[in-house]
Length: 367
Length: 271
Image (cartoon, rainbow over all chains, first blue to last red):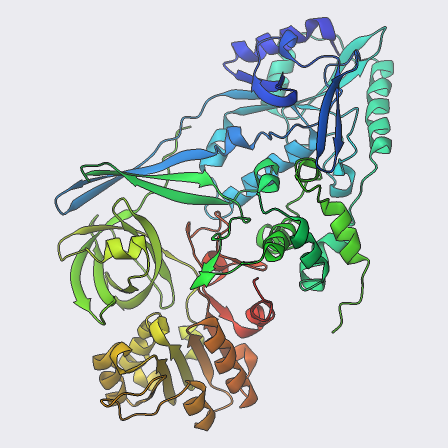
């Protein structure tokens, strides 16, 4: 049990262990992610409202420090940077030499990772590790990362983690997990450890053991959060979407609404697509290749002689069926964690759960 | 833990030979002293200095020398066009699943190629020609645009001498062409094909769908039908997402697929 007034003890202990602290910060009316140093830097007394294509943060004077969910940023930028150098090449007459870039790996503590995002980190790790286990830059960055999870207490209207089995509380994939209990009379956190490095940090905190009352209060927070989740998604129907409804007329109506802006792919904590960009110095002797985030909503994303997905409908189908269905064949699980970001940050307010329900309701794709 | 990002290996250009006005072959050998092992049907990512990488299938395997037959279509391939003998080029690979050469052994083989689709099939035909007694009747059906776009003419002669039945057809006739004119399915339709043969098809998707349809109507077992799928592979390791075809990552699960695995996907528009 960690009293709220001693929260800085946790932050200080992590900092002393060499971790840069990254956590939720309120900027420009959005709960984003940034470097924090003390509890004072957290967005306190605020709540967030989510709806398809809609997001607002309001001050509600609530006593909690984590009474909101996820903003548009996910933690993926810290483990899978939006831009990274892959290699440099030097040319001297006929000879070209290549040197792979060694990415900077910083010891970093991610503070306040929600269950959905804890699951997303594990999913991306599996994607990047699938080809050559143990050799990915993602895995190297993750090995330097300390994850402090926070159980959600106030899920948003767009959340559906319960359907995807990823929340509202995390059950693995973290070093430490906290449940916040906040009222006008008391404010504390109940800790769980999830790894050896988590236990080492917890030992240094010399915590008062949680009583039965503390533990019951913590499980009540998570239990209430489960009940507050309104949205859902039929995971079995999701898995079958690609096989059952590849040519459902609904794709056309989504295509009419979708702007193909790619917001959903940028905010999605599991979307991993990238492209390579090459540059060369003006004297022609040095070149560099960089990896940058890409989006399957870009028109030239997929080529086979020409553009494969000319229609926006086909691009949305690619994104949604990959996330929900074909990820299973490719990586052995669903690619969705139910964070709801794609719903909130879609300028057209397209709701993946509603679209799935509309198609899955039609059992009769004619043979 | 520090970890270096993967980068291309330097390969030396051993030979450059023009095939057509816009198509040429480069032969590459490792410049780092290490070996390279490639299988027919696999591809490499070739790096044109400062311009980027392009997926190019291996068009001949001769010990440590890998041939790549390239058509100039974009920035990278035009960059590769500048290579001369003695240059260094970057190569990542080989990647992917190739043709089922081992399981073809002992049976009849039907090879159907369209245009540049003959390139990834050439190492298979080389193997057949070299180890001719391991295979039964071998038929090649090669369709191309016109007489001027006919690739590997010397090889066609060699293969004929090795008792491979070579059928060439062009889309557009010309005064210097005395062979048949039409679509590659025409000689395929007219030929006697052993139902137990293994068929390998590579070319534009439309051509592959029609050729597969013809062979299936002639009683070929769909399990013995294999196609090579073209997509814009970028990473080669199933991590960039570009080459997805429904449930498949073409760079990892292909580019060669059994017909049954991909026939549903190929029937869906814009997948």
